[in-house]
Image 1: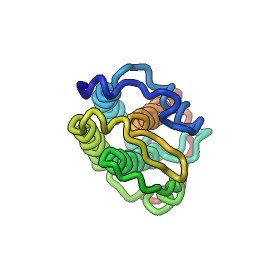
Image 2 (image 1 turned 90 degrees about the vertical axis):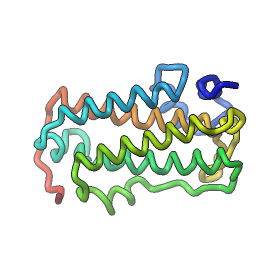
Image 3 (image 1 turned 135 degrees about the vertical axis):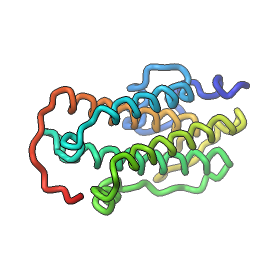
Image 4 (image 1 turned 60 degrees about the vertical axis):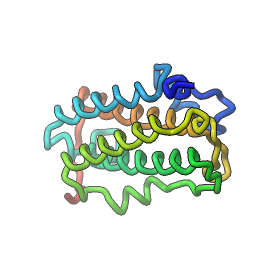
Length: 186
């Protein structure tokens, strides 16, 4: 089986959380590898049009700055990649969930925005390369996260849906340009 065939949309039996279903549903495509590539372009395009003022403001009704959103996406991309690697290798040891707010509280405001976007892009590239090199049967391998089963294929689609979700929010925030001051330290 060709990797692009293996990267097809997951069936509902490949994951168990409604949250995962909602993220997968946000992505309108048939091949997650192609989605990863298109999201790379969107990521760069969107980030290149953000102003310094937009990056460090909280856009109501949200509570994170755009810098924080991109940092969160980089953290999530790294975690999704680690999970895909482990499950693709046949390691089905239960992986605990991650508390995104704890990660956010410890890292937000620490990075140069250009470096954060570069990091996120490199992580996405690394995950794309991982998915391209695994054997087709590995896409069907299942592991558990916080006691819930999920396949490598479903994880890849959740990863794509997660970034899609946040990029859409960033785009909406910038288009509406509704901003309020924030006291985020940089």
